Image (cartoon, rainbow, N blue to C red; front, top):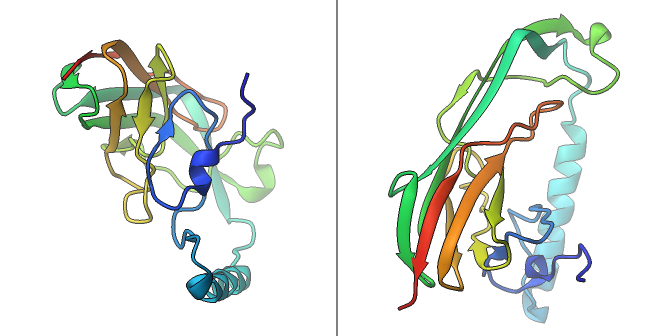
Length: 193
């Protein structure tokens, strides 16, 4: 069985990540390339980014948001072709996800729950969150999701392609603190070329 290390993050180009592996999508802006001639530029940029972010770290917020009475959290997924899609092996399919959550109740920072079940800011309706949910593919192992970039990490669709023919069921979970709701399921039929 493979470990949780994901070598795809260390490839010199964006080639995607199999959905069945644990993924930490961290290196979005300024990904280092394997080139000795420009390595110092990447290191300098990373150091500058670190120093500037260290100076701008905000303190505790004035208020936080917690789940209000009758809180609901709904994640809905679909594709460019709807809830049922048909593609060829290797063909890109664009996925979409929306999220509705609330009501949220504002509380002073001093009253924030110690278990971490709070957020700094909120939107009750988010029309496109496909890059900020965790996608689940059944059966696993034959889907490759494109990694988000700095320009698509927020409010953008997500692209997937399949490496083997078959029928796949895709869903997503949202990572709102203390409420990891599972979405509806879409079915993708993948045909051989």
